[in-house]
Image 1: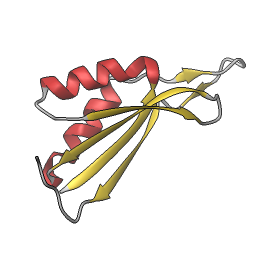
Image 2 (image 1 turned 30 degrees about the vertical axis):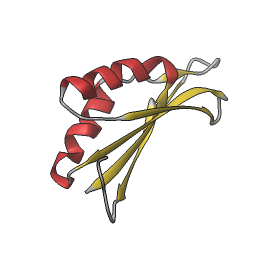
Image 3 (image 1 turned 120 degrees about the vertical axis):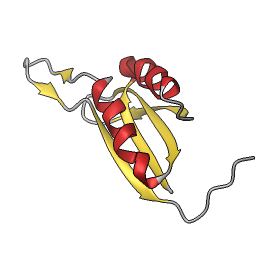
Image 4 (image 1 turned 90 degrees about the horizontal axis):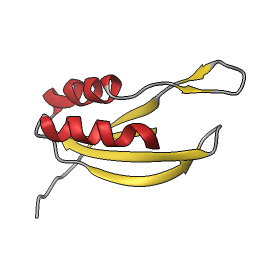
Length: 91
C-alpha cells in the first residue's frame, strides 16, 4: 500500500479529483499554499495499492498544466510524492 501525495495548482485540483473519481480512486483534498509563486495549491492524498500508483500519477499528469511566470517561462505543474504505508484502515 502507498500514499500518493500530489501537490497541484489550485485551478487544476478539480480536474484531478474528477478524473480520480472517474477511475474509482478515493482521495482527500487539502487546500495549501506556498512555493515560489506563493499561490494557492491543493494537496491531494490518495491511498492506493502498489500496482495502481502509476495510474494515479498518470491521472495527475494528464489533468494539470504548467504555471507561467511573469517572465513568460513556465514552472512544473505539480509535485507527486509516493510514500510507503505501514497500515491502512478504512472506517
